[in-house]
Picture 1 (cartoon, rainbow, N blue to C red):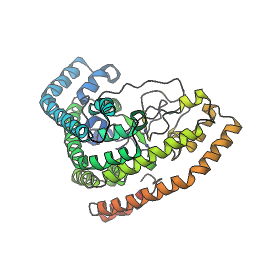
Picture 2: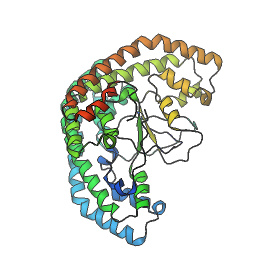
Picture 3: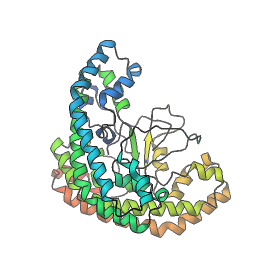
Picture 4: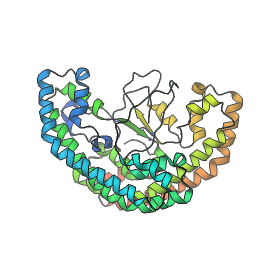
Amino acid sequence: MGIGRSTPRALFLAGIALMPLALPAALSAEEKALRPEVQQLVQSVSEKLQAAADKLGLTPEQQAKIREIQASQSEQRAALRAQRRDLLQGELKSLATILTPEQREKIKEFAEDKVEQFRQNGATGLPRFSAARDTVAERAQSAAEKLGLTSEQRKQMIQTLASQAEKHAALRAKCRDAAESEFKAVAAVLTPEQRLKARDEIEDRIVMAAAARSVADRLDVAADKLGLSPDQRQQIEKTHAQFAGKYQALRSDRLELMQDELKAMAAILTPEQREKVKDFTEDRVVVIDVTATGNNPEEIVKALRESISERLEAVADKLELTADQRTQIQSVRTSFSDKFKSQRDQRMTLRQEELKALGALLTPEQQGKVKEFVEDHAGAL
């Protein structure tokens, strides 16, 4: 949920609005929470660092010590991976009565965590979005069109899988503790400079659209600036689990609306343009390690605006949109404005409910700093 540092990068690969964070001091780098992608333990902290040994300038002695740390963590990591695999398989089974036999076959792979291989799609300078990757429900919702899910099936999935939210929250907490414990052990082997570089190799710098964020997401991003304690973070995640089903329902509705809007654009765009923007309905972007070329945090925010039309307008020059195309896109934007406003109002109402529930976990000073977290465009602290 939290975002990595805001060093400019050029290639956007997977989907959230950027809240730039300052670089942590070298001495406290190992204390900063690791990203949720590490919590899945698809790759361990040690495995990621060993793969980046040359970039980090690791000595043979350092690499040997890191392998020792990896070996000492292997039994715990295997147990956590087994728990996560069982949880995902449990989700998959709960969908059996909702999906058709063909859909069930297609969705099997969603119960597996895989190391995602990022590929450039030839649309240089354009963002590439991808789906949320944590649960079977999120993966299925994002692939709804490919699976041929009906609106009724989507609603049934959300209702069925909302009960899994607390289990996912509890397991994420365990995996986070394990990953942070491993990083702390590895950090003792590294120089201060290597520790900072190591985070870039361990963390996927994920940016998520403001419209997709919950209050808990925003608290996690701002945790260091708010001075949230480990206990507060755990309690926030546990409390948020009570709202997870409602957020999933809103995100599903949002995905459907954006897909409808993109379809409305089909006759306006050329086949080549349509291919370049086919993933613009997602709300997550991963920024990988590529030197920036004319891109900056402000451009990332623009690329993750609320609607498809706004996102197309943000990259109009890169898409080489004609004046006539831009006018037609603006017309589509107007025709969808009421639907987006309705969703915006629903998001604000849900965030207000969540903030009220989370408020008891915060100090009066912290509460004063997060009042604007119910807005779509809450600013950084």
